Length: 204
Image (cartoon, rainbow, N blue to C red; front, side):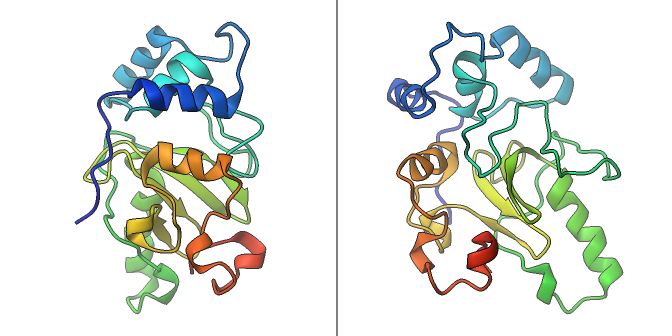
C-alpha cells in the first residue's frame, strides 16, 4: 500500500516552502492565475493535485532553474525534446501503473509491450520536465496514483518516493521539490549502485 499524498488541500506551510524554493518575486506575473488554471482543468477534464495546483496558479508556471535538470516546464507545455510525432496525450484517462515497470526486460512480445507502454507516457499525467537522455518527470493527475511523481524513460517507469525505493525523498510534488532544494541526488538511497546512474541517474 502506498502513501496517499495530500491532493485536494494546499497546506499554507507547503505553499510558503514553494515560494521560498523558487524565489519568485515578480508580483505574480510568473503565475497562471486561478482563472487560467480552471480553464485548463475544464478543457482537460481533470483537477490538478495540490500543492502543484496552487503553485502554478499563484507562484510560477514553470521555472528555468529546475527541477528537473532542464527546467520545470509550464502547465500546458512539453519539454523541447519530447518530439512532435508522439500520440495525443489524454490527461483525463487514468495513469495505468501503480508499481515500477521495467519494460526493457519484459519478456512479452514487443508489439504487446509497446501497446501497453504508450499509455504510461501519454495518459493521466502532466510532464514536469526532463533530465535529458529521454528521462522525464511526470505528475500523475488521474488514476490511483494521482498526486505522485513518476520517472519515465526509454527503459521503464518508476514512482518517486522513499516508500517505493531508490530515494530518501517524501512522495508527491512537495517531496520532489524539497529533495531538489536540498541538492540531493534523485536516487540517493542507492547512489553509486544504480545501473547507468552516472549518465542519467535512473533507478534501473
